[in-house]
Length: 230
Image (cartoon, rainbow, N blue to C red; front, side, top):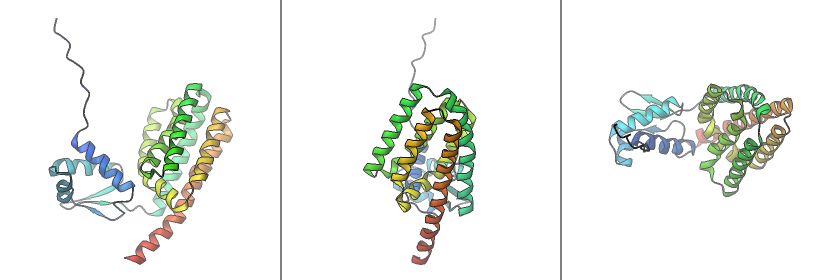
């Protein structure tokens, strides 16, 4: 009988590592809207060839963070405010529906997981660990939706959150809305634990859309300021 081959843990590939690094630099604001990402320069900076850089840029384009330009590289996308508003509206539409499906199946284990993530998110707020805000915000929201077992919907929502990650961080930085976010997250979790489906869904909708409205006001002011300084 042929011996079974040993299981191997797949190591992160160079394109994947590059994608994560460049994505973080985009969402953190190091690379701003309209900045060029030149393949040769990135390859030199990361001491790699152009091929993994090209693959990383393609993945970032699929996530909506950059737009590829033939023979030039990629440019960090600058979404019109209307499209940013649409992303938040899509989030509200899908997340409220999936939350309604999740709450009846919410177990004590789900509650414990959500509380743990929320504590971690609040610690990140306190430490001003901006690089963790978007990731932990999505993890908290996702923990509320997992009991729904809506796998395809959660996959779509993860993509939407990847696109809004940088704007969530920007919203908190520009509007100083951390205390408000903490308050709303705690109340949302309380409503889920109490199985108040209608109130939780309504509260979540206003949480998402309210953040979107505040962001757009702050973003428009910020963009006007940047255009004057150029």
